[in-house]
Length: 327
Ligand code: FO1
Image (cartoon, rainbow, N blue to C red; front, side, top):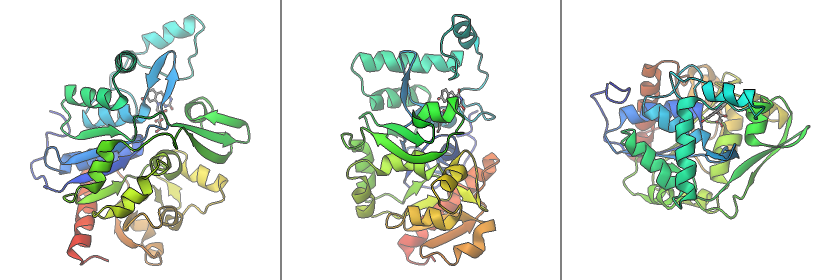
């Protein structure tokens, strides 16, 4: 039985989640398990995508897909469970580029995606095809079918995202982050439709890295306006808890960009876009001084129950806006 099938008490809320990779996918899973069938749309960052060994790799799309399908490796957070690495070892033996790990099972995803895109399918067609084959009854959409590539400007020069993140293990100091191609790209039409859906209960900005994973989406032409026009409350979940990042290089990047590692920085970053911010209990004192409505709860997701509970809290918080009784 998959993680999705274990729940009985679903809510009929309708949610659009904006999501990056590992951190965001945890909340996406909680939402998926909490909402009734077909009520979740996840728009996924594609700034991390790249061409590698002739293959089109979409790490955040795959992380969300594998996670919702119950196929992900929970230790690593990315890739498939019960993976083997024969391909990598053969590749290394031949002197191929081995800095980016592609598991044998995972490879099927990249090969098939690349073939289909070469044959004329869009990234979103491939993504929804995989999701339906894997039995996922949520709508998964790349933020755009246009190519957007995140480049990290560092003290060691400009690095394509995966070179920075994986090969250099986020060690170079970040000076600026750029999204190549973003001005020529457009938000996916289904993303715009979801944002404009009058029946939407909430737009949730998952606790993904605001600078690396959410900003590529916000940089798409028309995206900020569409978020501001949306009738549903926009709720961000803070990836910063107690002055540290829940996961990954968010805090390090904030320090390098001269930003205090606080929930206030997160609130400021999303200023004018969000109606509410969910923060962890340890940040309750600072929360009361922010000029955005704040929901205080346990925001660290260790267990499956944490994911469900946080998802339910986010939905209830969003509903309190419509009822006009929150804050
Ligand atoms: N992350 C790593 O730290 N090392 C890897 O070798 C690696 C390979 C990889 C392959 C497929 C995939 O879907 C994800 C992979 N990731 C790897 C994760 C990925 O780099 C990051 O999680 C995201 O791009 C950041 O959200």
